[in-house]
Image (cartoon, rainbow, N blue to C red; front, side, top):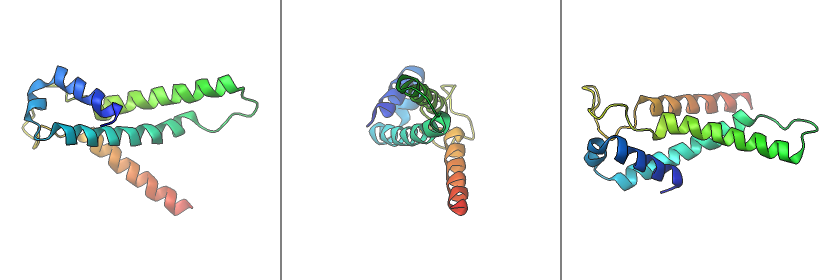
Length: 121
C-alpha cells in the first residue's frame, strides 16, 4: 500500500468507522485506492505544471513543480481518497466500500482524454 492508500485508510477510520468496518478487505481496497490516487496525481501534476518557462531559474522550476504536485495531491485527496461525507450509506449506494462517483467520473474522463490524445497522435 502506498502513502496515498495509507492516508485514505486513516481518513476513513476517523471519519467513517462504520463504513471502514463494512469493508471486506480493507488492505486490498486501500491499496487500489492508493494506486488510483497516484495515477491521478502523476497525470494532473504534469498538466498543472505546464511546459518549462524559457529562462526559468532552477529554484523557480523546483517551486513550480512542487506547487503542481501539491495541487494534484489536493485534488486526489478530495476526489478519490476522502471518505463519503456521511457515515450512513445512501439508498443508492450498493457497496459501503465504493469510493464514490467522483472516482468513476475521473476514470471515465481520464480514459476519454487518453483516447482523444491517441487519435491526435
